[in-house]
Image (cartoon, rainbow, N blue to C red; front, side, top):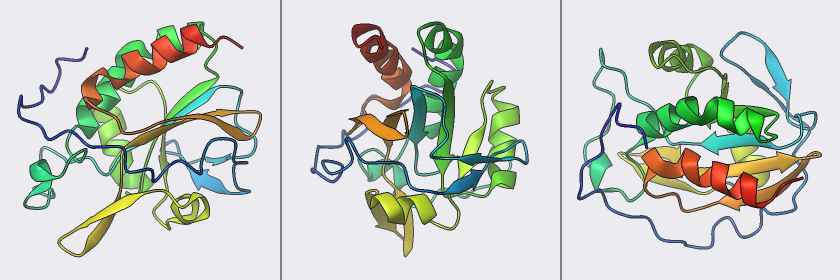
Length: 188
């Protein structure tokens, strides 16, 4: 568990609303998304057992961008602790057959680059700022203060298809451990 950014004890827990039931087995769309290293990645050409953890947004210590009421929305808070968890378990995930790990939000690559660098993430973040993947896969979202955000979920992608979906995710700071456990229980 990551203690880099502790979460409050009273964090509201999200419930499974069935909004990802359609995803398992779907083919990844023919899209390329920008990475934080100024390259792009083709979603149909991902290495086997790619982990894509989808999160609503990350804040920045130098900016107050978190909408009012954010902590009251089940599943909204915890993007930074979740990313730290994947950072902390990255080598173990790779050692257990994960080809790559990506974080994904609708924030710009420039914005995501700051969090990648600040948190010393050993993997790249994907930007879906144009909502292409979100719309193609009909990913679940929520609205606050008139803005849409993706709900937290994780896609396990193998051979161009979604092999498994983690949803809802709670608590987010322990999620990377859950993914690692699933991978070790479901070897390829």
